[in-house]
Length: 397
Image 1 (tube, rainbow, N blue to C red):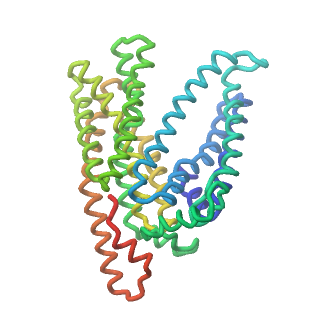
Image 2 (image 1 turned 180 degrees about the vertical axis):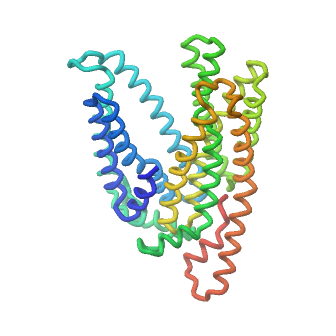
């Protein structure tokens, strides 16, 4: 939560391939040090350092995607990136299982200590790849795998949409960020999304299956179906948003599906098959994340500092609100119904807010902002071609 906004401002000044690679190797070193830990306080300190530097990765890479792709391409590209993270978590699970079963006692160490050593080893080729192959942004790229014409063309693609980087790293940044509509509109969307506690659905389903006396194997395996649904919806909604040219109907559709699922959870006393279907269907929750990230990238125009800060800020804000919310409203002691804390009814209320805000609310705010900019520029005779294209281009909602 602390590192994300700062890291994403640094990435607008320091070349991304150097900054992101530095952060990767730094947090990987702290991961390596975990294998020597013997007390809880040592773990706490190292985990803080890991989180501080790891916070640069997600928002930073979404910032890079927003620097390279057109508004009509950001939906599917953001989804592909987030899906790659989902797949990475799956394979890391298989790796951990293999290490636990095959490395116990090797070299006189427990298998969990070997896990951190292998994590560090895996980071080394990624860092080497980053230094030599990562392309930075179109306006600063020196990537060896792009020829001169391609380097010019990638810049032209972005500037044709009026998204040429503007502004400098000076005191005006604070005013541009604080007075922007993007910071508040997307913060609200991300808070609604986070407060549905959808990221814990696999955990909630597992506790329900356990309470229903399913076998240990089923408790571990059945909830993975939520991840499969998440995978399908991420790819399909990103593609649909790009093809339609609007995220509004896609977000509205997902809002309806989530409302149905959380209404089932709120009622709870329904047939087992319907409840299981609702859990699986609620896996569509994950596709909202890349949709919002792509939305931020496309709506901030050429203001790279506003774009970078907003991407990181909403991520940190979401973590800040969902952690106490989940602990208070969805305590494991209240599983699987969470009736004493009214967990599912409150989450349902935020699902409804999410659907309404990401469809009607954002649609209204973006058009209000566009009209305000047009009126402002009408009173200013000196308007650059880049600004004209940015204002007059269709709003990619």
